[in-house]
Length: 372
Image: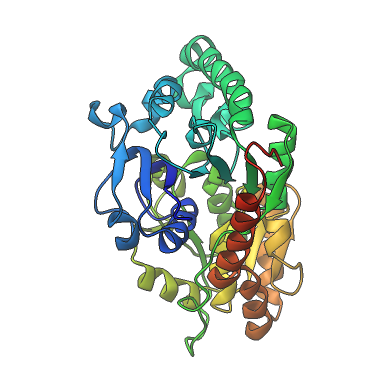
């Protein structure tokens, strides 16, 4: 039977981990329609862009491309207005609102969950704390708004027939916030593109990250200062000015780089840094695929992608002092590039595609209305 498939994604503005999952789904379902709150043309892969992309009414609002978080209170209404009556299979790729799409009763709805809504549950202070938006706005405007969103996020979990999580860590958050179980399918990493070459490692550290508060780049900057180490940061984002002020000229901010440039940066780094708690974290896997170790906080997805002492160093306390000690440890250690790459292969795109195919087929084979 030919399926009418809808793919739902929170917003299309860049090719991060969520968009790479969507790209793999687009390869399997080349005729699927894509529904999204916002879409910035030219920011996603050609494979995604070739699809019919339906945006929400929020797309027309002022500054929607650059300040979409300002419209958070409108997300529930916008996502629920999409009409999916024509579809037999709905796959949402969600870290915010996409999982709350209303699918018809005869359709299966599978949600690949990158994370329950971070702002509403456990990262409020990183985005809307007093130091970010001011004490009055944080307490009287944003906190009540995010509390309402958290209640809506939990209530709409029942719209999903089956949850797929991108890590054991996220599966635990789904269990805690949604009271649902989830199947684990790690996201795809292009281990063919990211591979070692003969480039000798340098003596500097590297971060590849969006410049946003929860990435805790400020901790890495201070840790490198304490360790007397050089740091290069690839990426951009709203926190750049604050971070440049903190760095005081001692860190090289590279801005947005192409995939080829990032691959070269991995190969030239002594190690790649991950101070923030990640739901999964594709960057550490890409670095290992290029034969470079990782220094990461011992939380979140890093516990699943890094083998301490073999593919990197984990530190327990999210402080510059603890991280600086880990930097000194990784600089003194020896790592086998082949062992690093073999670990990265566990998260290859091929394995992701194979596993997702099995999960989707199993879901379609179950009776309509099955809750997993």
